[in-house]
Length: 77
Image 1 (cartoon, rainbow, N blue to C red):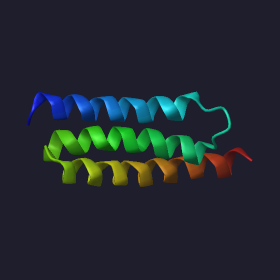
Image 2: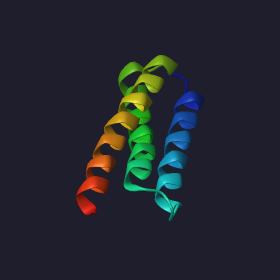
Image 3: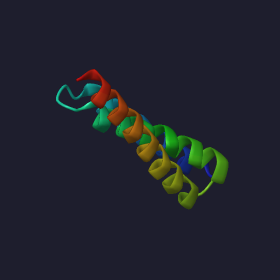
């Protein structure tokens, strides 16, 4: 894997994670989906080493994060 592609992946994942933390009007579901997508993209890139792995990881992380956030939203009310 090229260093430039790894750098871009890390920067995009970090940006997604920061977006989730910096928005005061996001629900737990939305925030956790963004953070999960960022983490999943990093894990997918590390495991797969290609764009397909990154996208699959991001999608899986977003779904898992959204599910956890939804659980938090429904139990906090």
